[in-house]
Length: 449
Image (cartoon, rainbow, N blue to C red; front, side):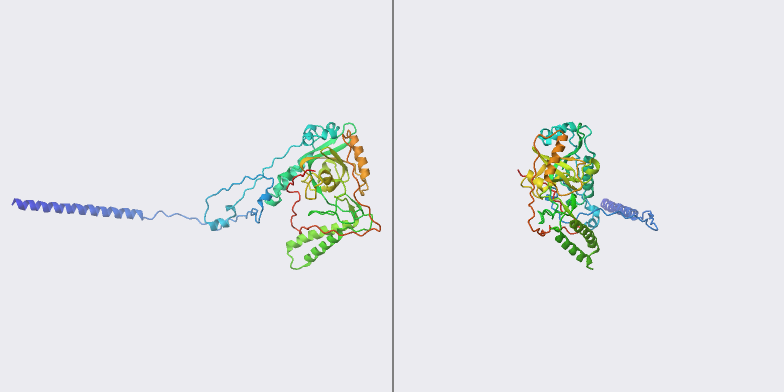
């Protein structure tokens, strides 16, 4: 009996255990189903508003894109470059390639604008001999002597830098940006003689031609022009040595312009070049000009005459080291460039000077122009008369500490009978529409005289 009861209790306990386990399993299953039903319940609907018509967005101008091959070693001559690459996380390469803002070069050129020399002491730092060479110069300088043209010159340089900033190959080098030390308006207190003083470097001008004096062509440079601003009517029937090359170039341009296959953009460039050549040919037939290789003249920046009065034909002095050279204003150059003289003066200062090699790279040349001293009518330069007039002008500003350099006429006399002009090989012409490479864009070392 006792054994029966024990066996029955064991069975009852086993059934109770199974019942409890079954209840736990069924409860777990019900809870899982409830959690799943909550997880897959649909969220509240989101209302999406689609406009009937998207507003029209005005197209933004495309930023300039720099393409082509650039020689940065030459490009940044004299320009200090701080370079850094700033990576930014982006999207797919195919999307970034299509977005012009994904690959951007930010250009900002920092340029310090110089201050002009204002006193005789500051001028003497450039040329210590200047107070001795022109002892009356100190009395001509006043606190208000700085010319407004100095600011205008550097404002012009900055304007051109802004315009060409995306044309990196056209940027001025540091050497050419800082090519002018000062521009002063002077007046002698006693004689009242006016003068304009510039301190700058010296580039070389080899332009000009005169078949009356020199029928054969003179030394050419890649930027050679057979004309100068100073000119006078021809005195003989000898044609210019540069007339035939100009006429041949004009014929080539006209033939290309007449072709139906010539692109419209090219025709616009050709039209401008043809008009320029026709004007040059007409001028060569009527006038004679100064010759850079034989005549002592200087070139003034465009715009100086309007402010200070120095104009073509005026007499001038060029002071370098312990020497003073008589000269005249023979041509007008770019408005953003100062300091240029004829090849004749350049070679006298430095025998190694050429049209492409300046005699003085440092800002150690002083140019003194006497406004209102040009004689009319213009004609071939008389070097003896130039000498006498410059000496008289020097006396009016207090005299000179050394005799002025004496120029000799190096043009040989014409043989008899009078020869015909010998055509000169034409310089390498820049195609119409192309920007000529500047011969003064990168500094050349000044060789020792």
